[in-house]
Amino acid sequence: MRKKIIAGNWKMNKTASEAAALIEEIKAELKGVSGVDVVVCPPAIDLKDAAAAVEGSNVGLGAQNIHWAESGAFTGEISASMLTDIGVKYVIVGHSERRQYFGETNETVNKRTKAALAAGLIPLVCVGETLEERDSGQMESVVINQVRESLADLGDDLPSIVVAYEPIWAIGTGRTATPAQAQEVHALIRRTLAEISSGNVANIVRIQYGGSMKPDNAVELLGQPDIDGGLIGGAALQAESFAAIVKAAI
Ligand code: PEP
Image (tube, rainbow, N blue to C red; front, side, top):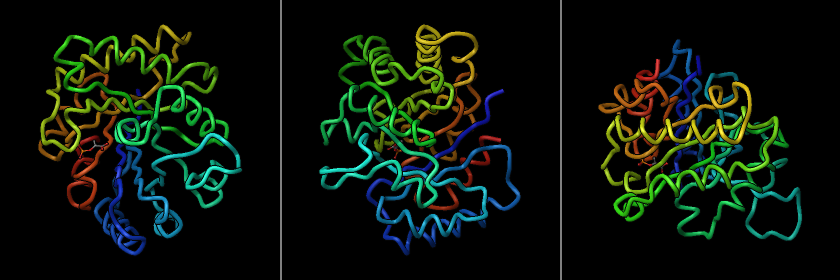
């Protein structure tokens, strides 16, 4: 049985003090709630304050990006040790906004994923097709290729990762994949994971759905056999809606 994981991707929202305050609200909403991994991913500059706010709670802390080098001349980037040093445990890698606006490729996603794993961080590796790709019948080949290339050569670390299936047409649009559409792609991702691994690994890896998940559609999406959690954008910015999604995962 895979433990569900609900992660909030705050994107470029919330100052450090706002982040700490939102975490306090989330902790209050989730008092006594267990059985699901809960993660918040604030902007990088908020992480230190956020680390203090999550301390001693069951809310895990994640970053939104990581560089593959340990240190060096990479202006604006953040290394794995900078994240682990302040208590970060998870990191989103290859979000479609980074692929779309910041030149992220499957190759760089793979390098960032490896750096995260080497440091003991849990990467939430994002894949997903555009509407054009879906409408032109390329969804399967695009997603299979993203999984194969982004997760290439992870060896024994593969079971530690989380895959986030985020159809780009559903992100921030209010248009959600139906539970059946999402399940179909999650099953495809699991079959692809089975092809690149051995033993029971494909059944261990958790696959989150992301794309306009809200309290009113979470129960049905999270009830699908291969949907093991959610990566939440807009609805993660209010404690009440985020907590409602977490509770839907139990
Ligand atoms: C996201 O950006 O990862 C996301 C799923 O956003 P939203 O929930 O707002 O669609």
